[in-house]
Image (cartoon, rainbow, N blue to C red; front, side):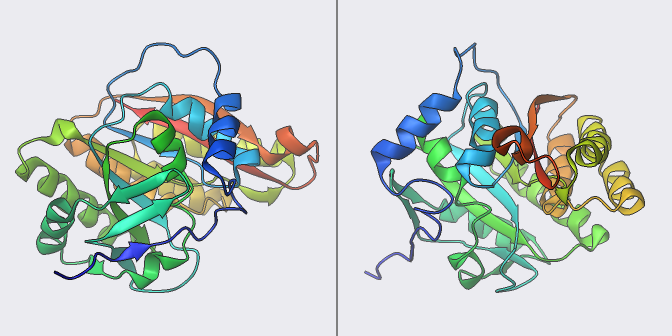
Length: 273
């Protein structure tokens, strides 16, 4: 029997701690008293180093029921691989343990899509999905993933991919077992007040579940939101699966952490119901 593909951690020790104990301790420090967990269709999480954006991601995830299957959508920062790259089989390792790819679901997506390509290389060094995994593992140990990253900003293709993924999820017969997570940071390297104003408008578009409005705002205001492609796909999928509302759980910038407000990156955690 062929050994599974192993995707080893690329940013452990840089974006987040190298040891399981240190990861758990840091995530625990981010979380206030936990309220009840809600059912969610999707969420958006940031993907910077934990010291900057970990609190936003942890507070968002601690308020929702993490499902058995997670489709992870993120931007491709490295430039490796196909424009729309899925990894359809194997295991992702983190310091908190191994996470299996749901090959059946991944291959269904692949078969039903005219855009997605099976490309493990694209995922080898990319951090945008990896940084979400230890936080997910902190709250739930038994889940499987389907990782997909986007290097193209062709809006027509992104909407079609959203439709294809939503149809494949429905065809599984158990859409309630799937959580969609889009990974994105917001404005990059602008003064705090300017970043907050731009991000406010992008967030309003996401909260209204309007991917066209989001794209329009990004173009009009030159918003340097790295993951607007996966967020566009997430909104499209969520609406087809019945989403009616979204909630901003937390927003902060790197300046709120470091005190340097001259050049910040924005981070938002949003849940879609």
